[in-house]
Length: 284
Image (cartoon, rainbow, N blue to C red; front, side, top):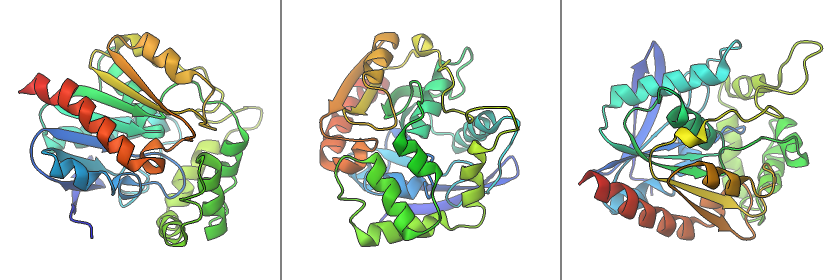
C-alpha cells in the first residue's frame, strides 16, 4: 500500500504534481522521459524506503508528464522543462537537497548543476542513474519512438530497455504503465521530441554532441549505470566519472537502462550508503 501523498502546486501558471513522504534532509527525485513516465512510475518503490530511513523524499512530475500540465515549448523544450523544474524547486523551499535523476532526469540534472550558473542552487549531492553522456541512435531507442499506445507496445519498450524480462512480463505493471501513457496530452508531449522540419536530421537529443559541463559539477556525485544499457554507448559512465571532480561509479552487471527498477534492493542499499556518507553528514 502506498503511503506517500500527492499535492498540486501552481508554478508559473502550470499545475505541477508532487508526490512526497517522510521528514528530514530532502531528496528530490527526477523521473525519466519515456512514454508513460512520471514520478510515481519511476520512484514509487523508493520513496517509502527513503522516508523510513530519515529522509524527506519529493518527486515532481516534469512539465508534460504525469499529472503536471501537458505543455511543450517547441523552440526550447529542454530549457522550458528545466526552468519550470527550477521554479518548482524554489517554491518547495527544501533547503540543501540531494538530487536523483534517471535517464532524462539524470541528464537534465547534470546539465542544471554543471551550468555556469547552476540552475538547482540548493543541490548538495547528485545521483545520475543512466543519465548523462552522448545519446546514440539505437535499436532500443527506435522501439521507444515507435510506441503505438497499446499494452503490447508498452511491454516492447520495457523489454527493449531492460536486461531481464521481469518488468515486461508483469501484466499488472504493464497495464499500469500503459494507463499512465494514455493521459490526455501525454503522448503528444513525449512524441514532440522527434518532430523536425524538412532537411533537419536527428531529434532534440539523439545524436547531438553532449555539451554538459561535467567539470563544473561541484557536489559529490554517484553515477549508477547498467553494464548492458541499450540506450548508451559502452563505457559512457567511466568518462562521466573522470570528468566530474568528486564522483563515484557503480556499474550493475546484467542490467539495462533502469538499474533502480531491475535491482531495487541493491539500488536502495547503494543509494542510502552514498546519501549517508556524502550528503547527510555534510549538512549536519
